[in-house]
Amino acid sequence: MIRDITIGQYYPVDSILHHLDPRVKLNGTLLFIISIFLFDTFYGYIAVTLFLLSIIKMSKVPFKFIVKGLKAIIIILLFTVFFNLFLTRGDILVQVGFLKISKQGLHSALFMGLRLIFLILGSSLMTFTTTPNQLTDGLEKLLWPLSYIKVPVHEIAMMMSIALRFIPILLEETDKIMKAQMARGADFESGGIIKRAKGLIPLLVPLFVSAFRRANDLAMAMEARCYRGGKGRTKMKPLHYKGRDGLAYVFLLVYFALVIVISIFENRLPTLL
Figure 1 (tube, helix red, strand yellow):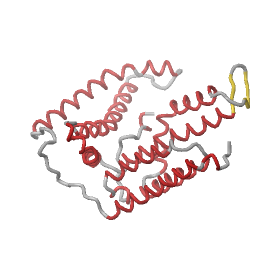
Figure 2 (cartoon, helix red, strand yellow):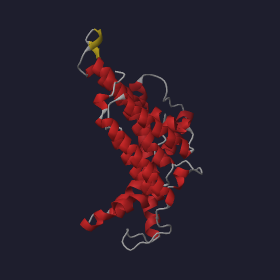
Figure 3 (cartoon, one colour):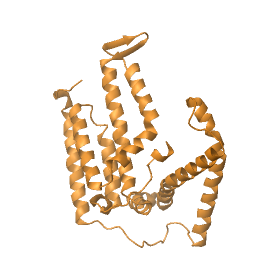
Figure 4 (cartoon, one colour):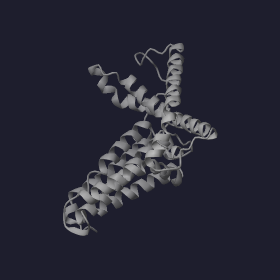
């Protein structure tokens, strides 16, 4: 399960998406997240699916690697589908005891599950194609207007970037600790969910110690390099929009306009459910 968590990881490959400005990818991810909540029809999900598949194709990131990240949220996905399926009132289709499945519940469970899957895939694709340094620079540029009202933009972007960078590091550290304890006879795989959850408790102490040690090392390294915040700092590779970034914005706006049109006329379109 630990190896299946892919969020925060960067997948190095030569693709159009990797060469785009990080601001384009951040804005595109935001538009994509907004778009999946603008409609509730079969046609809308077709548009989102085609858009997402085209982006994955352009990224050159293996589809199996992207989908692997869904294994980490399978419990959340099942709970979401379960509650929407059985707790949504409407026209009853099936009833087993006190459990009732309605037409509206089936519709809600299906589409909420798809929304969660699209949300994870779209968000993960941004980190797969953008390095932590690029994310920091892109966030700082996008949030720069807030600096006029005394918001510490650079520090916020730096903290978010470090948090994303630490995710794969801590996952790797957790995997090493689990293997070390399994070599000493620990069992993390047998038994029910509660037993396995209790078995993970011995991992917490060494994991927290390792996390604090790494954070302290990072702080000392930044202090040794005279890091004093973002004021007056220059960039080794300043961000500049290029022609491909403009084309990417046009592609995003066309997709978003199509989703808005579908959401406006969704009541006039026949649905499968």
